[in-house]
Image (cartoon, rainbow, N blue to C red; front, side, top):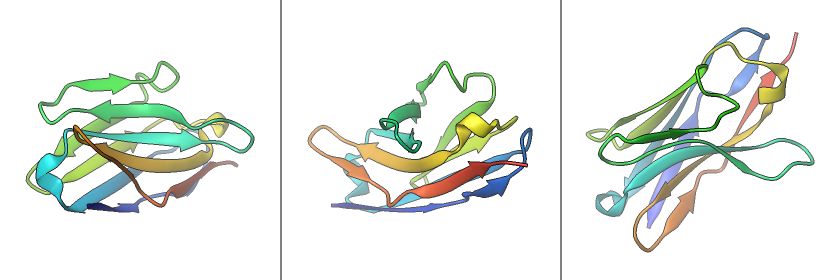
Length: 115
């Protein structure tokens, strides 16, 4: 099993920045992809960004150029740097890690972009 600990959410004004972190523990040797999803009220959960163990990243069109995903394999941690935040980025952000036979979710962290 893999346990995930997320941090970094909060309230920020439009145009501001936040950095989310997600640290994995447990059966970390089997992790391949680490990523972030988000779910806004009344909407389906959607992929924001994901990165493989080799560093290949996939970024959603809606955040490309504003958000950056990175990964520290030595710390088993994935980061989401969010810049130029917009009100439409408001959502609960979930960390996800996946291997060949499993997928684990974090508890979610709220990001609110409002003036």
